[in-house]
Amino acid sequence: MESDIELMLRTKAGDDSAFSELMNRHYKGVLNYIYRFTNLRENSEDLAQEVFLRVYRSAKQYRPEAKFTTWLYKIATNVSLTYVKKKNKNVSLDEMNENTGEVEDSGVEISDDIIYRKEIKNVIFSAMESLPEREKIAIMLCKYEGLSYEETASVLECTVGAVKAYVHRGRMKLISKLKPYLTEEEEYGL
Amino acid sequence: MDCKDIKEILTQYSLDDLGQVEKVGVERHLEGCRECKMFLSQSQELWSLLDTWEEIEPGGKFVSNFWDKASIEETKLQPGFLGKLRNLKPNWSLAGAMASIFLVSVLTFAVFSPDTTNTLFTSADEQDELILMELDDALSRETADVLSIYGPWDDTLDVSGNGDMN
Image (cartoon, rainbow over all chains, first blue to last red; front, side, top):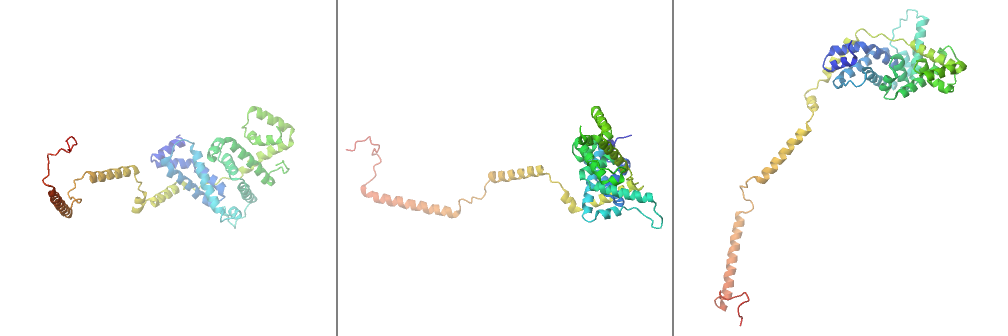
């Protein structure tokens, strides 16, 4: 199987099928990364396409110096941050929580499990939103996208030690914020 | 290591990202510290809780929609005549070289070209010169007449100072 870099070099040479293959490999990850960033299902697909458009447009200048995924997630982070900042000027967090784009049939009884899942998703999103930007990005990349500390450091343009600190601090804050959803509810000296 | 130090590396401990010495240190501390043990358990529980935020499945036409979008973008980006003109990247070094050659050519022509029209000496100047020559001539004649009372001019007289004045 060809590596991402080889596919990107083929794209640079004008082979669009190579770029289609690259998208097939990564669009699900990018889409979910953006979805977790924005909590807006409908817009996530458009934003994910915007990410790939940016990658495609800059293919001519591509130099295989860094890992493709770190470059891809750096662009995805920029697109998401720009969108969230722009959106937050007009839309409140409550509106964002409500506007998930999921279709609900009012005629059908919604099970407790679905309600719980929706609630927990919004609670996690709110807790993530409250974290400082770098802690949030570090946790999302390491936890959800499976990037290593080194790759995350490359996306955030910082050291590996800084990424470890971001993940740790973010994790402590999330424990504090999501305490009602964890089994133990005692104080841990946070 | 105290509880604060242990909590700082518990994330790495749970991800099995610690060296052997630190790992043993953490395990020894956890045996005797209820607070840190509970923190570790909650930390692991949090990670599981985050997993409940389910992924979304993309629509099946992501790639084809992308190419549609890309071709629309490409059409939009095609510049018109003015756009093409604006997008022209000037070759400054070539332009500089051309300007230098032009300047040198103009200067060379100005300096070395034959002057066919003598604008410095006009017919009015020629007339003025004739008048001056006539005036000069008249003055010489007048001076000669005035001096004639002293008799004819002796050209043989030695004026170098070697001759005998007496």
